[in-house]
Image (cartoon, rainbow, N blue to C red; front, side, top):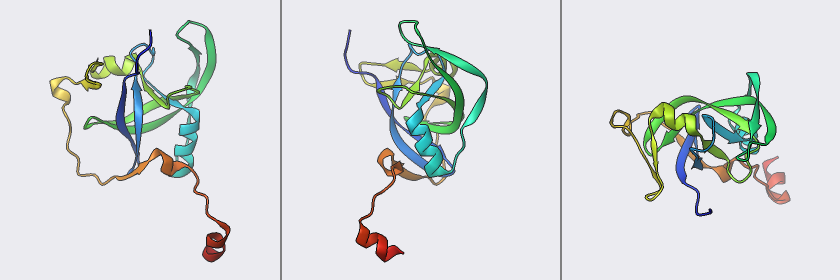
Length: 159
């Protein structure tokens, strides 16, 4: 056991703002897409988004089949990953631990994508090749979402 997890750089996009982040490709996660609660809250606050309630709550289970927390909300975002654009993906909000975003088994199945662990990339079906877009996206880093602290002199100057 062990080894490095398969993480892929991607961009989460909403309202013309793209946040660069690494996403965990996890075919063992039995779901579509998941987002850590802290990141979801940062995105909602920074991009003026709202968490949406799930119709039915979802009882999460860990890799060891032990019952975990209950997920009650989701967030819909666009995803750019390896040049492929996917629109209006629902991310279930949950406390994920070490990873902020996880693409699960159902995402891989739905898009017919296979992980290439050796090359740390994804293998896409021919009909889902990188898609050009003429949409302008303001790219920011995950760190840009955190509230910025200003010193007292700067704060006085602004006010």
